[in-house]
Amino acid sequence: MEKHLRTSLVVLWLHFCWVSGKNQVEQHPPSQIIQEGENCTFHCNYTVSPFSHLKWYKQGTGRSPAFLIIMTYDDSKNPSGRYTGTLDATSKHSSLHITAAQLSDSAVYICVVSARCSPGTCSQYTNLHLQVVEDA
Image 1 (tube, rainbow, N blue to C red):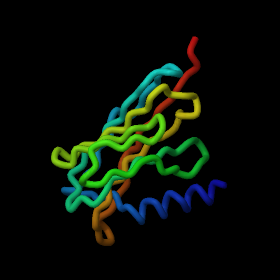
Image 2 (image 1 turned 45 degrees about the horizontal axis):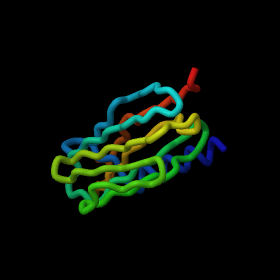
Image 3 (image 1 turned 30 degrees about the vertical axis):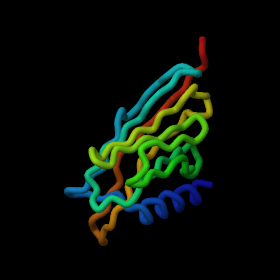
Image 4 (image 1 turned 180 degrees about the vertical axis):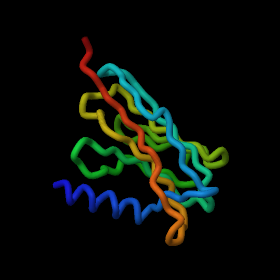
C-alpha cells in the first residue's frame, strides 16, 4: 500500500508539476481543527503563468490523493456535493469550501495548478491539513 501511495504521489507531482522560482503556489491556513458539522475554507494563491487549470485533491491518511474539483480560467464556482471550489483567475486565487464537515473529511488538501515546466524547475509545496473532531 505504501509503495502504491508513493507511486501515486510521484505521478501526481510529475504530471501537474508545482513550479518554483517566479511561479509559486501558496496555500493557507496550513492546518485547521474544527468540530464535526462546522464549515471550513482553504485558500490557494498562485503566480503560475500560463495558467491552464487548478485542481483540488483530498488525501486521507495512508491513501492516495483523491480528485475533488477542477477549475478552469472561465470557472468562478464549481460545487461538488459538500465541497465547493471558487476561482478568481484575475487575482490568481482559489478557495475550497467544505460544508458540514464530517470525520471522514480529516485529511490533507492539495491545490494543484497546471503549468508548463522543464526538468529541474519543479518542486513540491506544503499541503493543507484538516482535522474534524466529534461534537462534544
